[in-house]
Length: 334
Image (tube, rainbow, N blue to C red; front, side):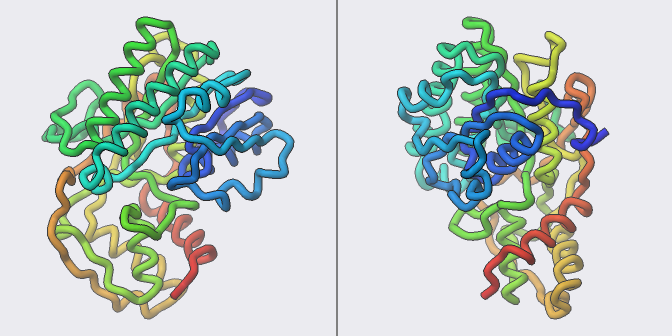
């Protein structure tokens, strides 16, 4: 099973918050390609208009420029909506450490606004982006949904609070919610620029420009890197889930394998050197470990497999090959 085999209902009205961002724009594209009406809400703080440019002329696409911190904006965006895929957030652990107040305003107050708007609009299901950062200082490997530790950053706190609020709204108001704990998502449309760029696009642009990428720490930290198409599949299956035990809970969204940062650099060099052989000779530098970083991350995806039918198609190698090809075609090379 894979995304290609998902038999998803078409002609639904779906709101994607953060729809001009990396994950959100990919969700918008898939939903439109499969016959749905999509409304995108984004304030373009981290999202980009160019990510949704191809959809703007579609009669099935509506772009609402607005901020989830404003309740009235949220209420207008949820009118006549069947489902919500809530991706809007301020990501990044370092960003939250540098500015915890704004992260809290967007990720907690904004999230609560969206829940209230969804409740009032009688939206059928609210699927939201949770985070693997919720596992915090838990040493257990692989990570299972029911066992978490204490958060290690303001960002992690905000994403855990999302889960608590969603649970309360499910019990108190009957709003169907599903949280998806994303593990290090990567792929097309992910921005390589800026202070808080994710590690894979950041490494790619450095290697493409013949710069030595900087690894935080000795390179032994590991992550369960997850290709964007796996994440799309998890979202669509969450909208489709029909059994009572599948809703009002959270799931890990990952592939279920971990890769060290040193191994990641090696794979990127291999795949990029097919386009530019000089990249093979670039060696990474090492910097200090980042505050709030979890040393190792590996997900159990058994719950999502059993209750959602989640069956991720892309391991790290297959996903990186596709991502590298996309970046090579789309990056501004210095």
